Image 1 (cartoon, rainbow, N blue to C red):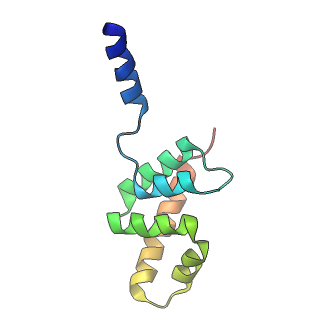
Image 2 (tube, rainbow, N blue to C red):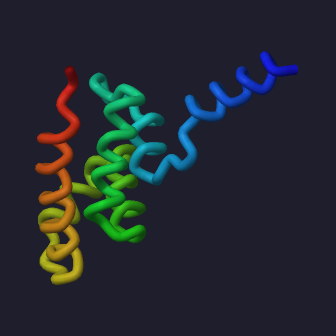
Image 3 (cartoon, one colour):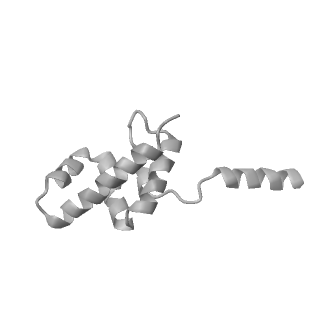
Length: 100
């Protein structure tokens, strides 16, 4: 019984408790450098820097890169403000989530 409890504890610790929208989108993408650890890292950075709505919007870019381009080029002030937050998040994620 003790072995079963220990095994369950190890499995529980190895399973992410929460995968945010960016981590899920990253893992589902066909990006060449998208490892589970990289996706978890960029999601963790996003959770500290982007609102839930921003995270959901950014997650859409993984499956639709054209949406990112359209957002970046938009004259809509709301999209412009989002893009500045997104760009800052991307820079921090790039620094903190370097592959080893």
